[in-house]
Image (cartoon, rainbow, N blue to C red; front, side, top):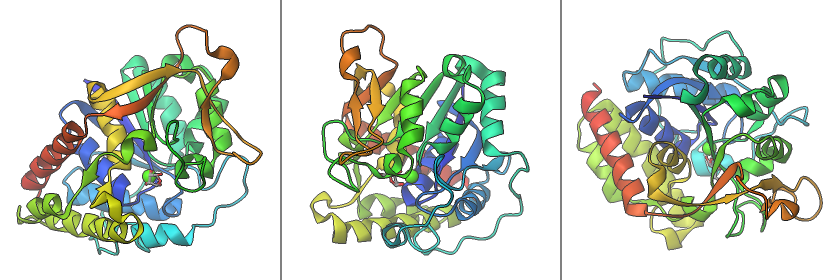
Length: 318
Ligand code: RIB
Ligand code: CA
């Protein structure tokens, strides 16, 4: 069975991705690395520890990763992130503080160590800025050839961005890291807004979680309802919330749910379209591109697989 590492900025949709990865029978979640984005890195790590304990998954180690972009000195959380994910990142829902604490090893070193140990059996799913991956590639370039698969939630090829007409949020935080990742030759699956905006979760879905009568089911329903309600305000045409980060987990364990376009990709790091994820023009005729861009998805399969996995997990939890 594939080993999976999550690299996340938890965040409501990251929290759904976390439960999906923790509950799936298709891969073994061996570790989680926290990053910045929706929240500060420390808050995200705390959220992951609290959630894993609530789900009864206390054997999964959690690592602190990057606190700001590779070419930046600091990170200031955007006001809009607090609005979309709540001040605490998990929809203002109170979670019981975990007993387990974060590991002392840095997340970037953990990623490198795991690549050396598991090689092609390892899939890394990144649902925040790609800074940890960029730093790992700089420190250990061999990783590009050794790792099995990297799946990112980020970018937009066929649709506009969500922070600018060109740029998706995770890419916008660290375009340099994303560019480095794309151009390194690493096998990457890009799960961008092209597909993540198509799979939508509704209050009727979270209601089934609440009816499980478990703490995890109730808390998750409250967390995701916050996210659904805010999307009724900011994107009423969806009639629910988009499954950005869970779609990346889905692509890692069920690539057959997606239509993928093989392409050599880059990221623009300056100019008016900074953060744009785009094919490399002079490589258009070259064979064996390292990036597969998801351009269509069977949304029913993504929503159903995630919901079935979460419902089983919530039933089994206390
Ligand atoms: O653009 C969507 C991404 O931005 C998701 O990863 C979400 O969690 C936010 O960080
Ligand atoms: Ca995220």
